[in-house]
Length: 82
Image (cartoon, rainbow, N blue to C red; front, side, top):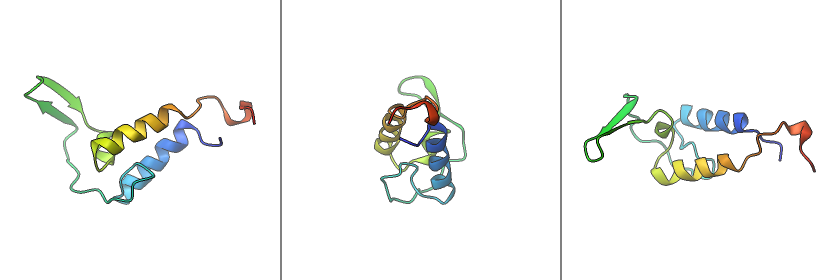
């Protein structure tokens, strides 16, 4: 109720700085973090920006975190109803 998308993003960033998975419910440590910004898939012939994905230990945690983030209200805290 008192968290904003910006707060959640800060939590993800701070967890990845200390080498923990960005998803707050996951306690796993991050493995080797790729230095590149993009991943080129020869299977789909696409280029993917992996900047955000590097903060998570797995695709599951990344998707779960994004799902949780979409549920956080974007309205300011002082406007929200009890």
